[in-house]
Length: 221
Image 1 (cartoon, rainbow, N blue to C red):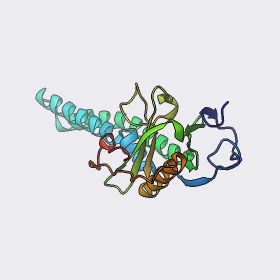
Image 2 (image 1 turned 135 degrees about the horizontal axis):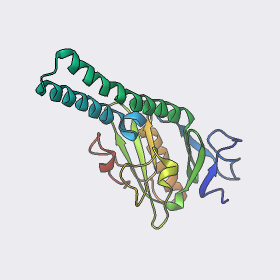
Image 3 (image 1 turned 180 degrees about the vertical axis):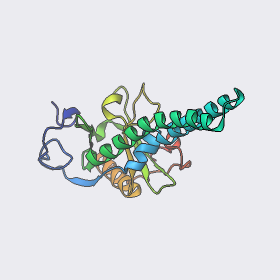
């Protein structure tokens, strides 16, 4: 397999986060990992799922009330839906924690490397030559996302990268370095590395105008 492109199974690392030793002339510029809360909230939509089950429980209680059920029956009916909802929410939270623990993002002088996956860890290499543009989005919790758009017709596997992928971009998946504590630092490192690789002046990486929506992040200048 080409060491600069494609996906490799993660069965051992000579250098943490990388599928093998760095080629001559390539160096690590930055490494970081996602925060599990960011993965849970914006990658797995745990908050929305929890709210959904709470609303179902409230509707069930209201429905029982219209049928003349007693308070205890209403509580029992609503509680059953809450308990049912706790199971998927707990599993998603566990997956988010494991995903954050096993994931590692790397920016080298030539590529972005994403070691992702829980049950089947994989390493995804994105050479700079395949990057069309990048963007950064900040969130209220203090973390940020780096989103990478690839040059057409190149693409990555949505399934292999999930949840480290921009939501709702299935046809043209956009890799995402998600929920970074030092998103601005990573953004500047990537900006400078892309400029150096292209032998161009260093561009400024635009910040997202909508801090709550990574999908509206501005493209790199």
